[in-house]
Image 1 (tube, rainbow, N blue to C red):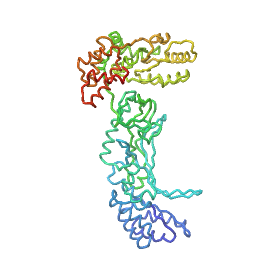
Image 2 (cartoon, rainbow, N blue to C red):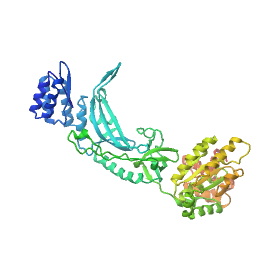
Image 3 (cartoon, rainbow, N blue to C red):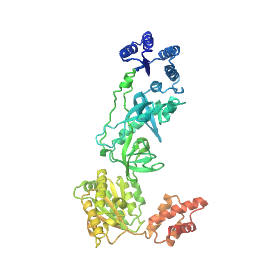
Image 4 (cartoon, rainbow, N blue to C red):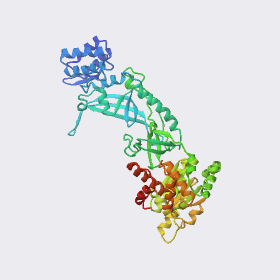
Length: 539
């Protein structure tokens, strides 16, 4: 709070503060005497006024006719007596009112900003009144500014991560508002034991998750985009879903600070408001979205691998034997993966829907490593672009020590011929792969025209075909159990006879469609329902 004095009012205020035993204010007024000439004025700070002092000052203002200062005193008195419900009536009184509000039932001197399903705290470091200005025909209204800091998220190398945030209020914005509703309009709330308990719990999670380099997590609901820290869930549409992510914190070197030299509060006799809060956000790569984002630990959970899914992988025995070999000696696998002499590349070829991608997905669960799936479309169409993008992908996959899947890479593995640009793309792809020492699955719908140089660098080439014999029955039964379709043995036998060439993916999609139909019509799934739905699958 500031008191505006002039040559006419100087002696009145000097006498008042001397009488009130506030010699610090009286001395400050004396220091301004030489500056006051004519109609000039000076602002005298009034730090830490008591309720009694404000009431006495209001009585003086009423007696002397200092209406503006009297209204400030009235607003402050109301705020002190009832900080949560008193109406803010004066912009100049707002800084002091905010100070008193923050100090009421204080814990750390923090304000909490609401985001989706969690809150992010900030330490208040300054509250000030800024007079209005006129410059070249442009007028800036007077405002009250609240400054805050927090240990926040930053992608810069060796960044201090000290995020400074400000909110401000003008006269028009405070009209009819209480302090709580005014702060709520900016998304901020007063601290309380519940918010502090939630912060402490999240902070413990943050310590654990932050240190889990390259581990896989599940993220639900919203996440901060990298480009805009203050927007949430806008750049990445993650509402309502579960997304697999990799903790890629080692890519950024973050530093954190626990204490802040908070002179603002020290000058007001408050010594405890120095702890800088942490924002428990982890730097993650979203595997499905191929985007980096900040995930709040409240929205994260550790990924639980399911090696038992191997039993649901229905393939010819020789294919399963190969997977058993690759997973039976993980020490040997790790030696191969980390070797500089080359990686483990597996080519999976065959018709769509025959289990190529599923093999990589299940294999990643068996060895309990993340699956980084990259569609060929992400790598570009020109030789230079393919080489550049592929290097980024391979470097990332090798850093994570994950299972890499390049899906539908037909263009990059096709046998070279007379097409010069196509040959250049294959050559770029081949040249880049030579330096990869990780685990790689590649899938293609081409079986017989894969370039020999590509195949020579693969440890195995698995050829996939539609299921035959008992495999068909197992796929129908497994998917029926998985989707709770309750197919009878008779229905499965009839379906196999009707669609003997159907692939696993087509069975899955047909069952999903039939389930929707049966649920809508309140009927069981039999051959008639499957036949009716099959026409919409082109079967």
